[in-house]
Image 1 (cartoon, rainbow, N blue to C red):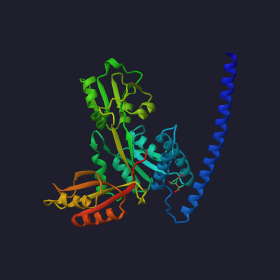
Image 2: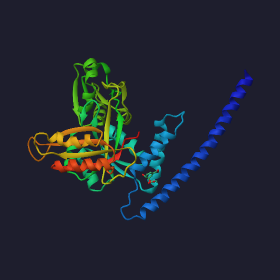
Image 3: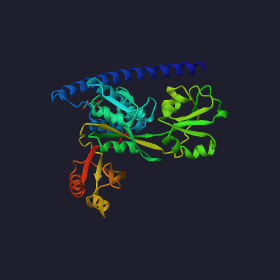
Amino acid sequence: MKEETVSGDQRLLELRNRIDNIDSEIARLISERASCAMEVAEVKKATGEDALYYRPEREAQVLRQAMERNTGPLTDEEMARLFREIMSACLALEEPVKVAYLGPEGTFTQQAALKHFGNSAQSRPLAAIDEVFREVEAGAVNYGVVPVENSTEGVINHTLDNFMNSNLSICGEVELRIHHHLMISDVTRPESITRIYSHAQSLAQCRKWLDAHYPNVERVAVSSNADAARRVKGEWNAAAIAGDMAAELYGLKVLSEKIEDRPDNSTRFLIIGTQRVPASGDDKTSLMVSMRNAPGALHDMLEPFRRYGIDLTRVETRPSQSGNWTYVFFVDLKGHCDTADIAEALKEVGACASDLKVLGSYPRGVL
Ligand SMILES: C=C(O[C@@H]1C=C(C(=O)O)C=C[C@H]1O)C(=O)O
């Protein structure tokens, strides 16, 4: 028995020594990688004043390679997340990237910004989607992060409408699994809850659960989930629906976990900026198309895509801001706009449209 303990201790010591050696090797390699990134910055700087340090297509390739190379035991996603952070730190050595997101702190949009840019980005919460657009346009930040669609509740109109009056492009996308929890503060009496705060989208994503568990409780829509969490602090008869980040930020206790009606509930966010992103090998393109109001207009718009075998992943319709009962179509397709087939199809669509704008080609969300 005693001998076994000794050999167990011995084994632990040996393994920890091995880990220490591996760690110093990893540290040496990370430093070498960081020095390389600094040299890359010099090369980019030599190209001119407004050198672009952040390169979405390259980052997507690095993450995809990390996943393809992986042989376990870590999952592909876990491996890519580690590389996400290494790259984030390397990019910060070149130039810290400044990002504005739809705040306040603790929202899912902040989580999306972190997922996309990593922890070394400088991020700033703003109160409204319009403000995120404005701040990027003004050059106060390099990129903005805004929600664009939810798998349960559909499109976020406000984001699409902003593109009608903006010259910004889409530089990337990020998808986030959205888990909602019912949370309370330390003064809340769970049996006395008469009010539940959350963002309207989140209340809608948990509608069935609320009908089943709190049918007679007032649902109060507020400006964000984080705002809901903040209000609950100090209210003995209220609860909030929000995510992990908000619970942690406001020190709330989770009463019921993962209460979203659909287990695959997820939200897609866009990275907006001023950059044209080269092809990464697995890309998407977003378009905004206005058609003259005539019979067959929608068919005319879609037909070239069918003919060139282009895969449309989404078509949304929004009222145009120029006249009643005229519409703007937001179209997402697979592929980069520099690809010959897509370029040809766009030329044909452009010829029959009253306006066609490529909002951007960007790497498909990796993580
Ligand atoms: C090093 C580069 O710059 C940045 C950092 C990257 C990295 O650390 O791998 C990748 C792309 C850029 O955002 C590069 O462009 O290669």
